[in-house]
Length: 166
Image 1 (cartoon, rainbow, N blue to C red):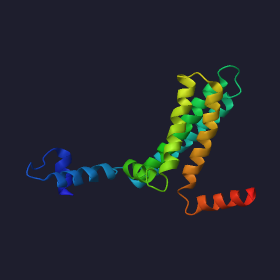
Image 2: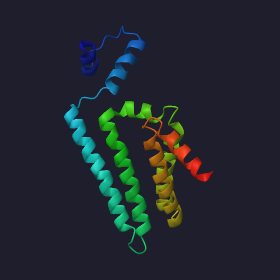
Image 3: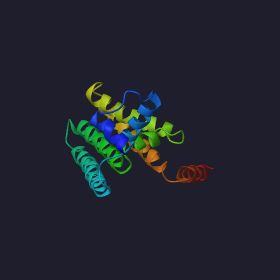
Image 4: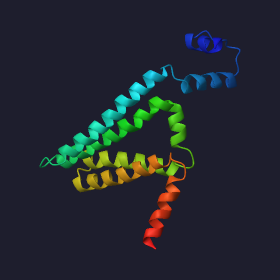
């Protein structure tokens, strides 16, 4: 703990090797200074914000003209806020490690691409129909990504759909 304090205060020894410095940097990045209660509160705030943005986006969908654009933007912001909320429970480094594990790598990439493509369709390409399609894909990708945290849930869903199709 003293080593960590020295590093954070800038009083580290120059004699330390690169490996020790990397380990201490990892400890600083991986640990959180927030208490468990504070992390749960911020999780609740961001998760509620995500739900509110998604509901607001759904309500704005019915506005003539710009409704689909507003829906796409607020729905995407809602998903980003909900995804950010879990960073408060796990910590950002652990969240990123879990997101890019081999079991959910494809789900993470597809989810992030759908988030980006939704915003590109609204702001850059100006295609409302494409934005709506990416919102649907975003929902499916986010659902598949979320299910990846439940053990054997994806296998059960695949078996269920394959038995329905056969």
